[in-house]
Length: 171
Image 1 (tube, rainbow, N blue to C red):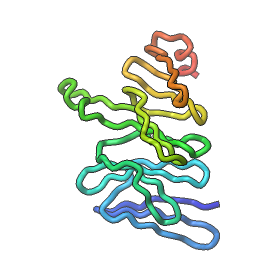
Image 2 (cartoon, one colour; image 1 turned 45 degrees about the vertical axis):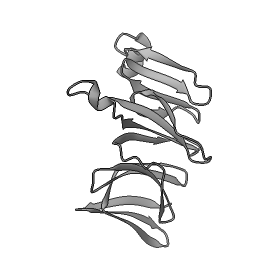
Image 3 (cartoon, rainbow, N blue to C red; image 1 turned 135 degrees about the vertical axis):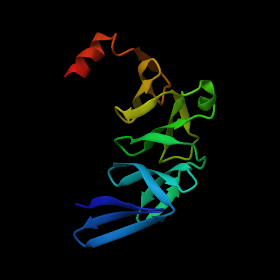
């Protein structure tokens, strides 16, 4: 088994991988980890550079591959159980203009195995893969579930008014 940990200093970040054969340190100068997710041998992370730009990277064998290149604020990074897709929320430019003091984020999925465009699911935060094709996330009106292959989804409404979610949240 390997253990990974992150060391962050002012303006510099490193991820260390410790195993039976020693330790490997991967340096990320001028960046800091915001979030990290892993499934199997695939590791993805949201890195923030010193200019305040957020981007998602795949990290393998000491190399990093930039999966996004837009710099928008991102959070809620998750990876599918089979490590074929990632999902995250990002702050939309339109979101900053909606109302004073409020922002809006959209859920995005991205394939790690095929060259294809990102898929925007809708407004929400905190995505979570229920299986390889179904995402559960918090929407502005409660919760939502969406199949990213068939684009079929459902809003589950306000969880306080929904007895199904009341039972789940109370246990």
